[in-house]
Length: 197
Image 1 (cartoon, helix red, strand yellow):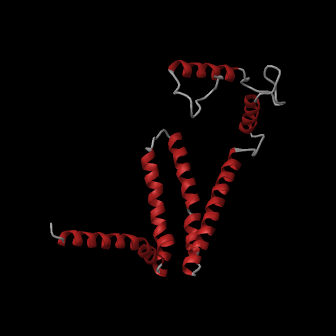
Image 2: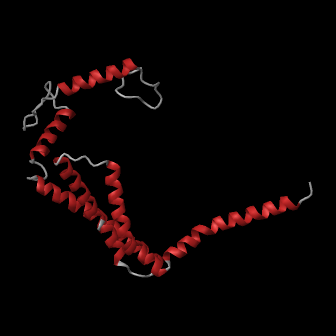
Image 3: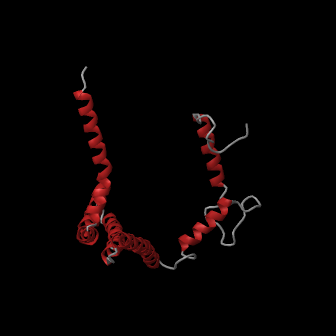
């Protein structure tokens, strides 16, 4: 059997000695990559390895030579990227809402677009609290962000569904199979309950 560096779907589970061997091979591979790679794409052992290429790229990104010049631009780009994703989602939901109700509602788009600032604000608060030495439990962070989303969802997401009847129609469609199952079950209980034993 050929030597593999990971478990294949058909191979037996790795033993402790196999795992130890994998760790040693990984450490040897990592130690062959220089700590500070040269900017010219240095070669390791006479040839350019994927690890060396990745190390050079990581060093250039960290140094700000690829992508952005300062951390402030990076944060701005991250925010713009997140906002673009939520904008696309909002526009898509406007189409879904219009298709189902034939009513144009900008509020669904606004609901999705407001999520990016909430997530960015949550991240900023986490960074500030760490710098101040305050450790906020992750569960509390998630609860606070979701609580804000629920507060915003009432007027922006659920409001249009209630005023157009969209929620009631979807609820009725979802309940129809359940009602049919309940009626079928009642009929079966009555049928077997009234039959002589």
